[in-house]
Amino acid sequence: MKNSAVKRIIVRLIMTPVALIAAVSVITGRVNSSGGEPATRVFELTYKATVRDAPAGAKRLNLWLPYPVSDANQEIADVQISSSAKATVYAEPKYGNAVLFITLENPGGSQIDVELKIKVRRTEYLRKDFARFNRSASSPLDPAVAEFLKPDKLVPIEGKIKDWALQVTKGKKTDLEKARAIYDYTLATMKYDKSGQGWGRGDIYYACDAKRGNCTDFHAVFIGFCRALGIPARFAIGFPLPDKRGEGEIAGYHCWAEFYLRGYGWIPVDASEASKHPEKADYFFGAHDENRVQVSWGRDITLRPRQHSGPLNYFVYPLAEADGKSFDGVKREIRFKDLSSEDFAKAF
Image (cartoon, rainbow, N blue to C red; front, side, top):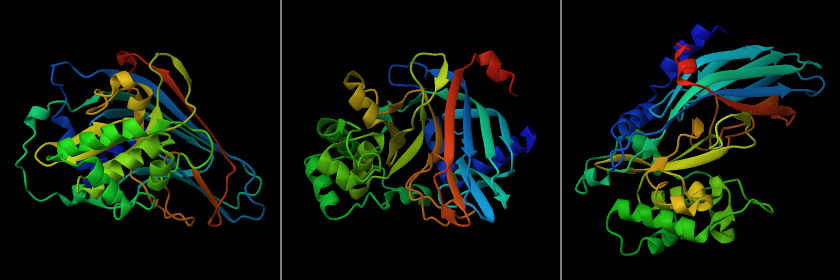
């Protein structure tokens, strides 16, 4: 696939209904309440996947990888795809996430190597001008926003979840006050702790009972409680970069959230980063820093072409299937390298 063709696909994919709502609602909040300009970071991201030892006798091997695209907070350029098998970019139907799909017939003992390399300019996402919040707004929600009032498989919003959300927000009048109360409750009761089993699935009942976990678990609580009270909230996932500039391997994923206020728009939240850095608790209610790249929205994702192994809890790592059955023989490596603004400009 030539690089120019990939860039044309990006332009078409990012204007899905969900992405369009995101772009319109984010652009209005680029300056924080003190008038400071948002920070930016420019870097190269390399995402490698290698498939070895496909099951003997398999007639078709399919591989899906997340494919980062431009939005209001990140600009993607100079997309380079290297693959030992046919590669195509699709958009999945529910959230419009871009998917890099690789397929190989009669893989036998073949090894599939895929490398996706992109340049990224990530901008700090700030929504701190809460004085603009129109508390009397009562217009119907756009369907693309209303989608984020629905439950996920591991984040139900009725029964005990709604009861707990009502307790946490007792006495709060506005959705902004309720969302802040849920955020504060999540920080006060949850511990960032990846020991033992059960963490990392974003299971709201596990998180509420164990009161520990990683970013997925923190944001299951925040998103579930918001939705239970009629506040749209959405989940995003990608990769974190260390604060210190340089280059290196990225060991794991990171996820974050946003909630929606009528009369204002989407507001970014990162409860797990606030838990790890308590001195930044106020900052991360209304901000995502620039040290990240997003690869997908949402949960319970059905890819395109449709996978046979059922919806994905979230989409950040490769999925491989041989003759419709998933298998774990995929090695991945994600690396970053900071660049100058001049290097990024040369990508266009």
